[in-house]
Length: 232
Ligand SMILES: [Zn+2]
Image 1 (tube, rainbow, N blue to C red):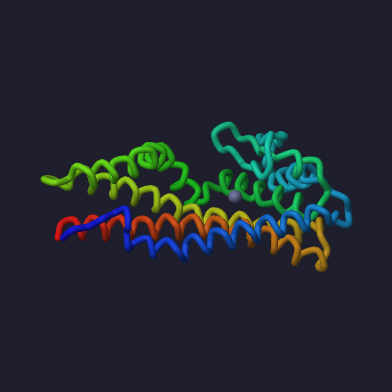
Image 2 (cartoon, protein in one colour; image 1 turned 30 degrees about the vertical axis):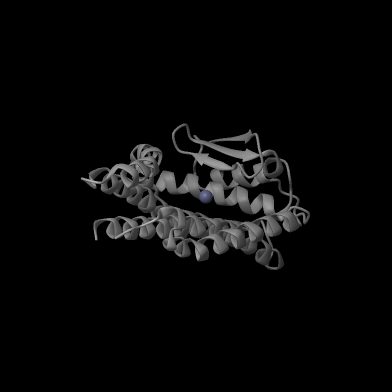
């Protein structure tokens, strides 16, 4: 069967994923922008919240640091640092304390050896390798696989590993946000009326991970269909 991948009909699979990704990006920007301007009543900064929640969780070997960039907040299990961007570290906005509590949630997951996080960390080297090679191999496979589809199939298998990683990321992220909301409420960092804002910020952030996973999955389905059409 003649198959022109420049006018690839399987591109249609990407459309819902692209729409979802744009929507998630809009939502996260909108909510972070909005709630970066609303201070929490008790005036805690992101750094205060992270340090106090770590202390309350009995974690004293994680360092809270300031890091460059916007929305670059992360917990690094390799050196046990909780890195907060300038906008989060020093701000006492609702967005800042929501994000700081979320990253603390990751530090607690690490301490508790929360299974999806352990699994996710264990496949990182394989995922790095796969994510660099998968798409080039798929393209090489499509151009040169007149005789054998081995390269194409290998590329698809490596891409599937990347998809698995994106899927394993989802419970890790959802769980960190659930922990954040619980920690902030139980330890009286917030009152009831401040909670919806935190939920909106963290919900929007979670949606970006869902969009990334959906987009990876849509691409995988596309590649499988293209490979199958090649064989027919
Ligand atoms: Zn996270």
